[in-house]
Image (cartoon, rainbow, N blue to C red; front, top):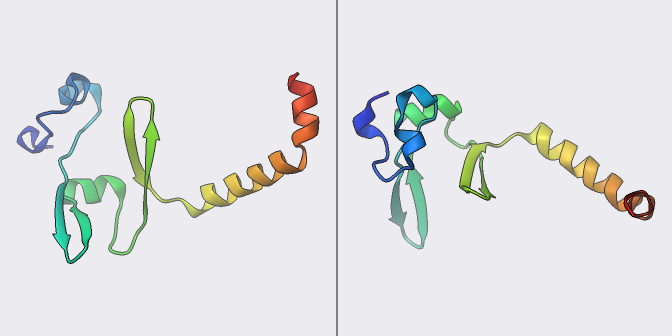
Length: 96
């Protein structure tokens, strides 16, 4: 990876090549009333993206994390949420 393309404002851990972590700068552009992000080819390759793919931007205690959308994970989470709703009294009794 070209270190000149790495985000200069990234935390020091992301600037260390030996850390295995990479920060890539995205450019935000606008068209009409919409904004979109332009991904450099290295980000497209790392995330295995193609036009029309979906991404998930998740807030974490350390900031944000962007990952490729995984419909199987979404299906599993929906099942888990259904189970939590169905057994909420039992789970509350076990917890308390």
